[in-house]
Length: 276
Image (cartoon, rainbow, N blue to C red; front, side, top):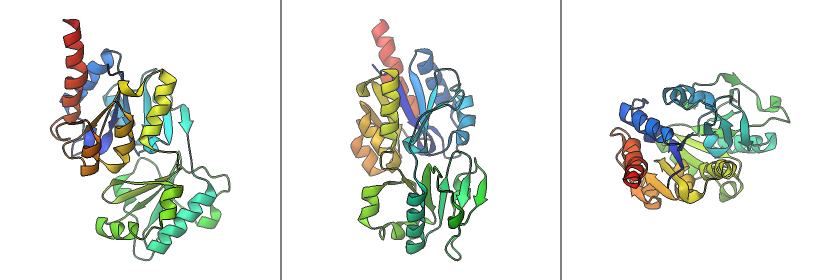
């Protein structure tokens, strides 16, 4: 029986115009009324999904959110941190030097702001087109505090040029950090122990929920770990080939209420059949 539903946002719960369909809202509402934990799992900060949480009535006592791709597990009613893993100032400096070496812009984010260090000449970051929930603050790298706790570093640029740059990243970086694409134009780098699967595992341990009682829904590379962790991994029809290969079920696409389709099939209909 499914006791926790972990749902990615962009490309999964949200339509192309970044809204939540009435069908998805209804299915989530019914699942929550049955006592199922519904947890939004995203690369965004909590402030970047508050309006969605409010739409879905997921800011009550006992509701949780997984943000920064699993680096942060929080209570959504208060923002209280349950678990957090961050990058050190030394690690951020190293990743910034990498961005300069492969000629792509770099930003890094903590709980309160998005930092804008000097970009390569004529190669401004596209991150402001993706994330505007936190203020952007210019910073020189020698001004970054020694005790800085950075949740993630991002490289955000035109897809083709970003992909070419990614091919130039030495393998040692992939061994030292969690590195994944969350959008065609966005590469994210985090503490090695961070991914959505580990974030859900921490929450499940807290709530006494087993992996085989979890359904996870996603579409992109940053959802791979939670698709593999969950007893039931669900890929969107619009998901990458890798995600589809890892999933046990492929639902409808994000514009055809794929989240609602999966919840109805594996949660609501199962309950109906058991009650007969």
